[in-house]
Image (tube, rainbow, N blue to C red; front, side, top):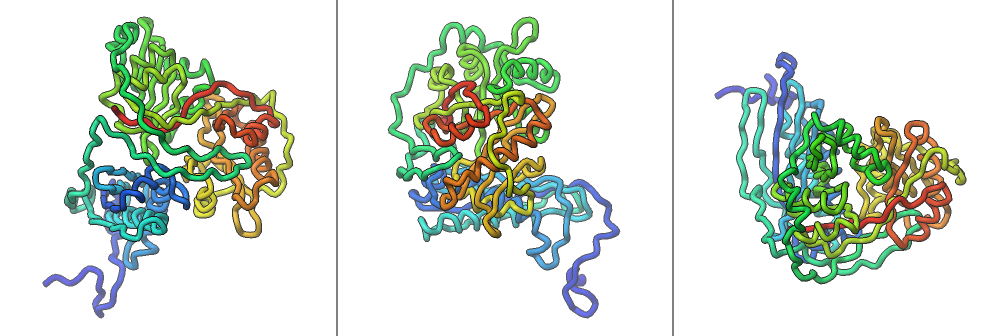
Length: 474
């Protein structure tokens, strides 16, 4: 029998020496699941868990765990990770959350353990955040699905949990119990629960849109200059779309466009896949957007989070049910109009060392779209009370090439509101942003007067109104 690789000559455990191996591209894909009760599953998907956004927290926890694997597994090598992609897919039929971790490196040893650890910790995070609602949760089989690179490529198996039952066309995400809104200082309010489903609308296209469907095509790198020209016509209105033209966001994008005979873009639809659930944004007139949805619907997800202009609502309703959309306002501020009216003292720059503290604070803001990669910009700021982070302001988008940024994830702990802490964070953030771009946008829920008043005092004005929320295929 061959000698065990993790034992030395005396029988003591040791780390295998891989110093003689070449650095090669390696990848591992692991999957697992956690099954919940029906009420708990509905609370997770509907954002009604008291501890906050469960899927966002689990995704970040899984990514952080992959980076810490060598500290958790005694004989595991410290591998330099080049990519960790963690996805969480709600499965309504079985009330499960399906978890997958895709990890890549260029190193001397593989990343199977990093992928398996990411899935495990993501499942445990869901368990921890939901255990007050459901004490019967079961973490299911966690398995290595695929491994490439090194001497044992294509090792792994595909457990049954990877098959995601498709939602029947007539179904929609179940409504969740109403959650009492929390008082906010300068942060948008939580999304309201979905009301009863509306009647199925007429799915026939307008004659004008039907005539344009054949012109819809997926855009590639050659189309980026024309796409950029089209979007820059409204920097505030298209701020998110412009930001997604830049790295690293562009790697998660699929663009569909409608072009005039001369090649000029007349309308675009973006499917963004960099979040736990896909997002869809569109720009153009009602006819163009209707044609874009019809022409790209085979590639669009069955369920997505969208920003939808009221003029695009009829086009969306032909294919998707979206009964719980909330009215939002896009506000914008030009550098020349900026009024630095608030005190910026006592504000700290936040780094990756603050990720756990940020997630803890965002329990009070379940609609946040925080991604740890945003901290790489150095444009997240916070106020502390002792060692506790109590207020944060940061960015969603920064595109210096397009001269625009979007700020967001602005929240103050419920016990520290009314003291202007978020205003101090926003002031510090805007001071730095206007050294890099000339235009800053933000979203705020219509009716959230304290937040709107806060932004207006800096000089923000409304650019347009839109609807935000989930849509599911009819």
